[in-house]
Length: 375
Image 1 (cartoon, rainbow, N blue to C red):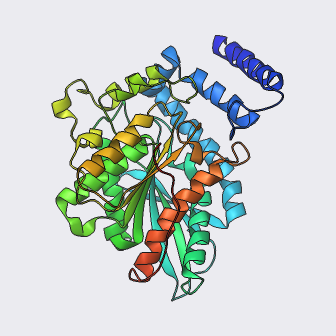
Image 2: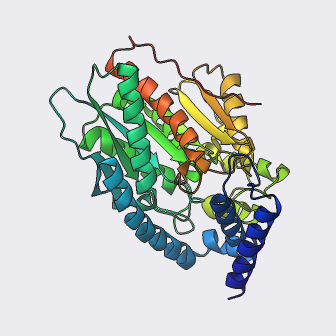
Image 3: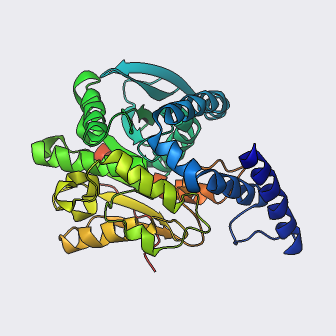
């Protein structure tokens, strides 16, 4: 009840501040809806509430169930709008979700797949919560593919929302093992060639994507995916974010600190980090990676340090896409809450379409895209 009372008070004060600013948002690309939502989420992740979300198994399970129900309902409308159909599939003891195009596929249609790994501090959220975003992303990539290919090659993009066992019940290395298993399911059970797959993930999911890339590279470079997309990834176990400011972010220091220990039981010992802290790994020999970062993100330095490490390792095909005055994982929000989210989605889609188009045409296509660079 006390939390509910604080939330009501915070929503009211946020609205009053908005009016006092002449009905202008706190930052250029924000909206009042987004400002209120950020305020509510930030309050819910502060202090003991944030810790409980990621280290109390019963509480984490409740949030997972709620996110699945919420995402299923909102996702139904998104799929209706974008011409997608939802197909649950069970593999490796977990439910994953296919988002397939409702349009019929012809014998000449090129099929591409995005394996999306969701975030949530390695502990909460569910694949179903990302149905709406997955549908939006698939349509954006298809649209960009049509532009790049000039409609010469019909193409469809399916999204596979991969699942994984979560902390605190299942700690490292179980989550990345499950993500690798989801990728291998696409390769060996679904029969999709690696050059037709892009891995993508946000926050903790971005960290799991990096773990998957590193493990697949070390096992067999022949099975590496075409490329990867990381949205505000959590890739650094060194607590570097403690040097930053969380005042405008969705994440709280308390939640991040608890989540780190919940995910990796020996996080205080750098010798045990392995690929849970991919920013400290050798990043050579990986496919092209698109790293999207937000300057108000509490873990902003995870993204910039990862890009710097890749450059230091001699990698030349990574892209860093920085967005000023935006918080953690801004791109996954619906545009009716944050219209600027479509800019983030478009940047991701342009990168994915560029590499899918090269795969479709054997590399014989000009697919220059514009991406922002680090300040």
